[in-house]
Image (cartoon, helix red, strand yellow):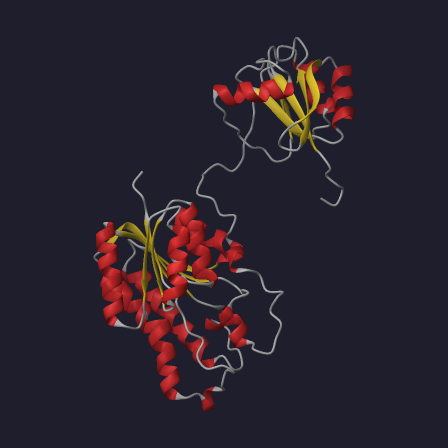
Length: 370
């Protein structure tokens, strides 16, 4: 696949840096902006070991600097994502609105509202199809906090601007997002006399941003920590279907032997079935070499067929005993694996599923609290 390109403003520290580091690991080409040239160069040198990085120091309110960013995007061949992250808090300590210096308020709006829109306007011809624009906002943009009149009103303006842009360009994904409180320099500047060590690190907001980049969520306002588990897959569950020649015996083996709860069961005139709960299901795909390696660790030789069932249990020895009493054959183990589990390999009883092997696995050292 063609490498995707993202432009992140304010990328030398805080959330912008956390996003750049993660997307760099994911293979994105990075175009980064920040006012601190020395810090930005250090970031460029670090991330260039992983991916292509263009770092352009400058002030996002400067039209000449925005032109340089546009040229970098053109040289990259287009832009998939723009993250308008650069912001300014304004004066600190935060003045009340009736005492707010108007020239400083104008500077806050130039940085937090005008510059992001100006950059979007400049790049509108460079966006790839299905482009994504993320304007980083704040809960101060929707909540009237005492003393936050300058920053909060600028973020409110950015949010409404974003909403209108989403209506005008339905072919784009336009997101205005609240990353939540973070342990950043800006947050410390907002609370100069407080200990903010209890605030989450910016990295904790990154999964929500990745969900916005990877998924098909509609344009709108999001609190990113509430969408960090969003997935683009239409799959909502996995069910393994086993055909048993001796149905009653198979039902007792899995239901009673493993204690799997009955979720549903049905009997037709000439057929029957039972649905058993098995906790969280995953689908693990391995190639022949990996399958052989797992067999070698658990059994000492290549033995499993194309389908193997794996159950996480506790305690493993007791469950093995129960299944052996119901006809399961021991294939290998117990063995402590390199990935921190204690595994036993069993063979399903004859007359249930010929050739099916089961791995019973217990996490070594796992406490009840864990």
